[in-house]
Length: 163
Image (cartoon, rainbow, N blue to C red; front, side, top):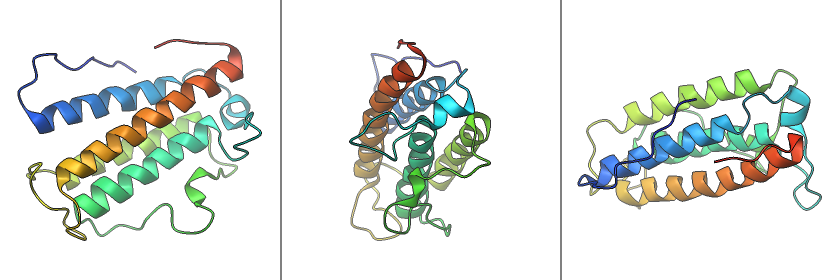
């Protein structure tokens, strides 16, 4: 997936946050490109027995759904992570790189449309406990952190390293 590094002379706060999020989303998706279902579903880390590349993408889908669409945007949608332990990491037999990436990409459009017309200073529409600025920063850090995990999982899957 093509990705573009955000402009270094950014003047629009919300715009630069969205640009970095789009960059990180594309990076995350690229980390599973070319993996088989078996490779992408592997859980090679003994300390994190539910962490797979596909599970990470499903979790990031749930993060966007909750924080951007539901919390900040006020969308009336079901949460994808209700339950204990958090079910967003779990895979079904139908989950493969293509289907999980498609669901993640569909969530991007939903997230962005849920926040159309809001400003960084606006309060989250669901609870009002957060500003949109805070929610975007939180989703950025969560996506960046998990994209780092995807780097490791990709290298363990097939030895590929990269940006």
